[in-house]
Each structure stands twice: as structure tokens, then as C-alpha cells.
Length: 178
Image (cartoon, rainbow, N blue to C red; front, side, top):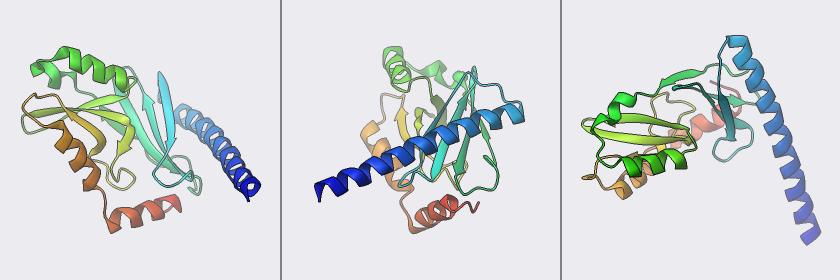
């Protein structure tokens, strides 16, 4: 029984690594075909699947974000351009905390605002429902204002995308249906 389990895990790992290499090759080709010049990119599987991948291409100050299912007819169908507006952090008081968050995000971060509150979002964790909603909230979103409780922000963000519709759209997207 233990040997069977080890074989299943080993086969899954080999398939996962193979799909990762395939997706990375396709990302490089896709960026080149679209004339997108990037400094770096990352790919990571979407929730619950190695069949749907989240892609971030990083330029000097902006990002190109997309999703790719191995069942898609073409690769990837859309890259959304995400501009990182450094002007939003002009009012941030605690630069030390901000620098720690930037290091934590490994350079994959974007600033957003909701009202007067500015957030830094770690893009590596993706957006809640980003495969079907372009402006979905980020999974890891941290307020840069001292008056906001970040525990609430993280918990709220995690719960916003949990719905039957989101799960249904995830399954459709994995199938290659956009």
C-alpha cells in the first residue's frame, strides 16, 4: 500500500514538473510573439489544479498577467497589463515596513487603493477569482495605513472569492473555456 502511494505521488510530481517546463516554454514564446519585453516571469498552478496556470511577466515597473489551461487552443489568450503606480505610496509613513513587504514579495507587487487606503498586494499569490474577473481582489493584500487592521483585510480577501460561481468558472477555465 505504501509503495502504491509513493508511486502515485512520484508520477504526479513528474507530470507536474513536465507541465511546468511546457508552460514556461510557451510563456517565453508567447511574450516574444507579442513583442512583450520582460525582465522576469513566473508561473504557478492555479488553485486545485496543475492544469491551469497563473502567469506574471515583470517589466521595469509594470506586469503582464494571464492564465493558461493546457486545454486552451492557443497560448495564453490574454495578458492583462497591470501598471504599478508608485505615486500611491507618497503618504506611507512606515517605509521600513514597506521595504520588508517588497522584499517578501520578491519584487512581484502592485499598489492599489480603496478610498484613502493604499494597499500593497503580493502578486505571486494571484487574485481571488482572477481567472474570470480581471479586477478581482488579490489574495495577499496588506494595508499601508497604520489605522487599518491587516488581519481583517487578509481574512476578508480570502473569503470574497469563495462562491459556487467562482468554483464553476475555475472548472470551466481549466477545461479551456473562457
